[in-house]
Length: 171
Image (cartoon, rainbow, N blue to C red; front, side, top):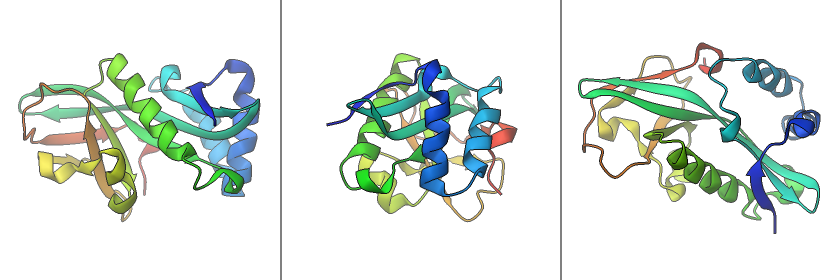
């Protein structure tokens, strides 16, 4: 079983290679290199699945924010999730996400966001952001914005705008 942990600096090249292999192009590896230089990069939210010294997956959440009537809420957004074909359907993606949830809670984040298929991400606890009165301040390029509240003291409906870092906005 893969151990999920924080990415080590010496693994950066291997993570970029993993992204090239999973996505079969250079774009995601270049994006990751650019995101690491961003002020919105949170090293604690860059995690790998380590299977006996081999990278079996990678997830990256970047800073995001919520500006609402009731205040602002520090948050993060899933930007990259990569699991190579030989490790798909083995629970690696789920472990990466669940580990990131706990890291986010430990950092005091209020929400995690993802743009994606609700049928996949709802099993991890994500819900439609619109159910909380949260709308993106950018085009989601056809995907739905989903949210996972990380703290128990949040009001039921927030009513606000979700802001992603400019470098990670889809569309």
